[in-house]
Length: 83
Image (cartoon, rainbow, N blue to C red; front, side):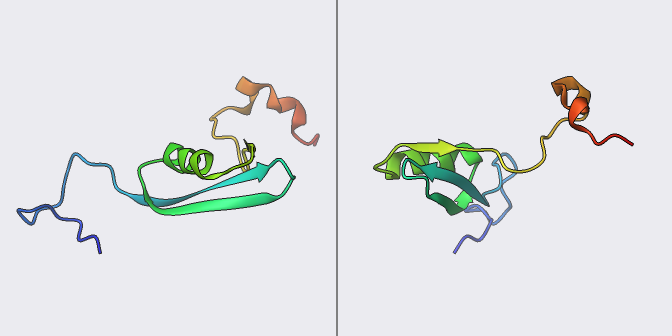
């Protein structure tokens, strides 16, 4: 159980919060799997856990929206539907 307090009883201010994160990956045999870890500092930590624990080669993919403010920066304006 994590209390969220240090030995003095105050909340740590300089540490990043630990959150649950997931990564979806594909094995060589084309099966898709998701690895989730409850308390991590970042997605990199989950990716390292997958690479360390898998016996086969794996491939990571990006699923979802691209986090950019302007889609034209990436040349994605051509993919927008025509109105």
